[in-house]
Image (cartoon, rainbow, N blue to C red; front, side, top):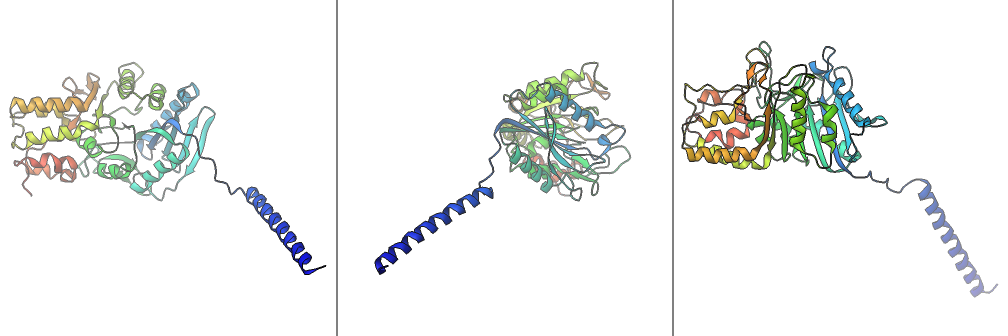
Length: 400
């Protein structure tokens, strides 16, 4: 064989083996499933129910968490997700490890398990759960239900009850140690995420301090101003509203109120509000203008309380009744009324709530500061509402 023929033969063989090698490599790549996994389809609405029940609500006496979960399951089986929405639940029970699962017509679908070594009321855990939920159930919009105990904005206080000293805010988790979540920490956890709404299914969260702290976390907040009976939201009828593509916050709040004026409720006590957070900056400005005059409530003024002396104390009072009784010009009150009406787009209450007369109920509560001593209680000076609004009142700003 001539050198030229030999060279051509070698080139042909090289080309053949190179081609064969590339083909085998491609086959091997396919057999090893190196292709990226398909992404889950985007749904119109994903609702995450963040259920912190490692407390009395999830204990043997109440088992409120199981009752609410059963209502969600029944609603889903009966077609509540007709718009294609999805319901995910993070459940931290009193006798179970925390887990994330989806409620489907075919049953619960496990998504992730978590350790009790970290409280459900830490910024890190809450962010991780929201991230995990969105990875498995991406959506055009997201709803968030915060389920647990709640006592408003207060960081330190003399009582959750008349005899127990504790901090107050959102939630109560008993593992790894008893933990509650400051509203400022809740805001820190939620700010990176966009939510269509936040529904507080817990007591005392409809206060201007809470809503102002969370003003960048969702355009709509639904919350109770007073205590709520242990059954909480009526999930049997509200699950469809929560997961609807055209979510209507007023309809959702009204459905809750319909339950609490019926004979189905264990206690006909409920005071609910729908807050448009986009108006909170204007409300802050109108309130700051009033505070800047140095006005405080007269000694003869009797505020409208949102808590009873014999039960959990939120130290909040009806905000509109308080501000409208301050000794300032009518033009200031008129501007304030307009701003308040733009924020509280819906409110409703039963005639009484745990014995409290709710005839003057207007939707939002607030802490009343008359003296520097008032401002220094319960961690109030740490609140954004204090720093941006109430601290402008020269009558109450003396540092103790």
